[in-house]
Image 1 (cartoon, rainbow, N blue to C red):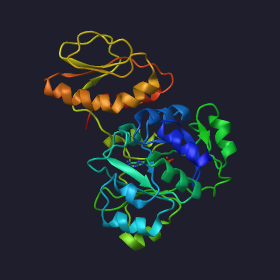
Image 2: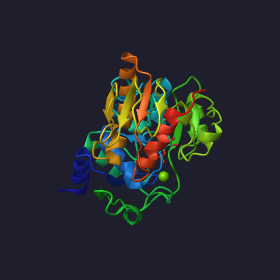
Image 3: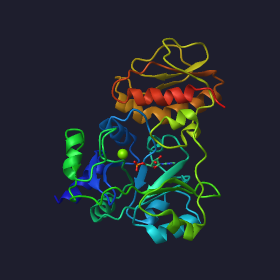
Image 4: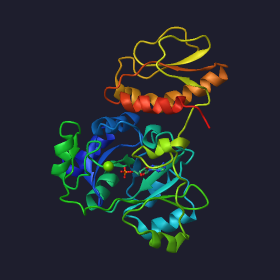
Amino acid sequence: MAPVARAAALLRAGQLVAFPTETVYGLGGAARDAAAVAGIFAAKGRPHFNPLISHFPDADTAFAEVLADGRARALAAAFWPGPLTLVLPRAPGCAIAELATAGLPSLAVRVPAHPLAQALLREAGVPVVAPSANRSGAVSPTTAAHVMEGLAGRIAAVLDGGPCAVGVESTVVDLTGPVPLLLRPGGVPEAALAALIGPLGRPAPASAEDAARPAPGMLSSHYAPALPVRLDATAVAPGEALLAFGPALPGAGALWQLSESGDTVEAAARLFAGLRWLDAEGQRLGLSGIAAMPIPEEGLGAAIRDRLARAAAPRG
Ligand code: AMP
Ligand code: MG
């Protein structure tokens, strides 16, 4: 099988494949497959879940997942394929895994220009999330050899497209509000965007807690359940729902099992759906809160604990 066809088949099967884009090598996984998305965080060794960019072969497939307005269409016509990412409201039928957007109601979409990325996305026929293909904290890779230095044994394949044009990430523009916001400067200059859609604002200054995080902005607006969340529960109080990890504690009014076997990758894949379901079911049944069983720090456990701590934090 040709390398692109093989890589596309691996992606469709939920495996991870690194591929070149015009910015850096990306670590791709099927965006609708929560287990594949969890696998990306695990392979990178990320200590938290940040929203990932979904990649598409063209604007039509990208805009099927989001609510694209005139500004988005104008920017796409001018700069796609290319190093521009648009953050837009999720479309009602959008089936991108919530783990890929860290529970946000918005989705970041991009159409890369690199011919191998184009061929892979077209052949895969599914949206592909792809952060940079390096271990967390390491430098972004610009060759297939760099990718393998960090990720050999952790991913199914890397498509070798030679060295990337170095140093330009995609420009990220948030179009979810009336004023477009420049979330990250990158390959498409701000002035070129402003010429089409008018001046761009900046995101509101992050809270001190958010500012300490590597993923810029927006974290305080991530999905938080309405019911209070209690961490590291070793018993269920009367009237509580339970987010279980490993053999479930008895007595819960509603139960969501993250991973019976205690697998943190499986748990990450089921985390956002579980919080949402327990919140809705708990409110329907008149329960008082969600008790979360202890999660170890190993593997994706640290990222899960980080997310649960946000869900449990006092609301402003
Ligand atoms: P990278 O994967 O390194 O290219 O980084 C992805 C960038 O897109 C980060 O700056 C994210 O914070 C941003 N991003 C992705 N999805 C969203 C979203 N739904 N809302 C806001 N920013 C996003
Ligand atoms: Mg990176």
